[in-house]
Length: 297
Ligand SMILES: Cc1cc2nc3c(=O)[nH]c(=O)nc-3n(C[C@H](O)[C@H](O)[C@H](O)COP(=O)(O)O)c2cc1C
Picture 1 (spheres, rainbow, N blue to C red):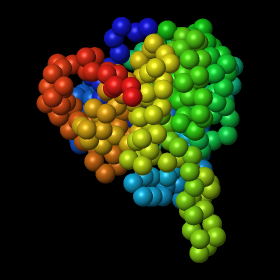
Picture 2: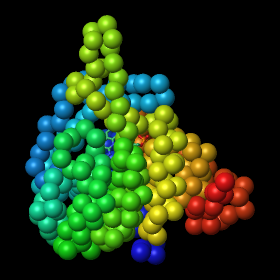
Picture 3: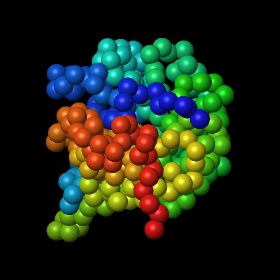
Picture 4: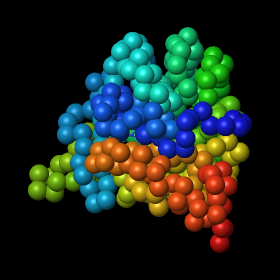
């Protein structure tokens, strides 16, 4: 188990909601972030899903981007260099289709400097393949083990709330050698235009994020916190210091801000600024004193 998380502080920005950092340059000093998780990269470029790709719902956002990205080689050559200038820790998010791909991917990242952590996204609901790793504890263990064979960089596995055995899958990731769990990705959903008798998204189903999913994310974090010894990064509907504190006492050792970035890119910084005061309300000086202190009833 990692004694210390490989981030500057416990507040990071979530994959797919903060671009590759460069889009947010000038909004605030990015070095203040605990870390940036850029958009997930795959081995080969992907064009993503048919538009429309986003649709706003009650207290949430439904998206079906479909892992649109230019592939790992482009990422290393054109996106990573800027990210490395920000001063924030960089957790590269990757998605794989097979165990064999892990070996190729791991090798590619191993020889690349300036990567502080890897987040293995086995949980994107908008693509076929890959998501199976988040539904089966044994498969999850296998894919993590494959990465572990080639790379020692701290490895976090991002899980899906769409499978009820999430704590078992987390145990699989831990058994495979993961250093932590990121929970959660989006919840599978559907928005409908009844007049046109069509789904609102070009792809049909999409992934729901934002305040609407916070209770689901908190439930997942609690279950995982109880099931494994490795740290959990909480993700899902976090927009305020109260949301953040809820995740910490539930069992998250760090958090990521996602959808909130779309309407307030400085959310992470505001939460960081509010943190000392909130901690003092629990007579705590740092997060470690409050992680998981939620009473079981
Ligand atoms: C438009 C959009 C794109 C996303 N793309 C990715 C992605 O590429 N990789 C990933 O792991 N998660 C992706 N996510 C999921 C977020 O990182 C996060 O796990 C999820 O949105 C829940 O957090 P939130 O409610 O704070 O947004 C995406 C979310 C949104 C809204």
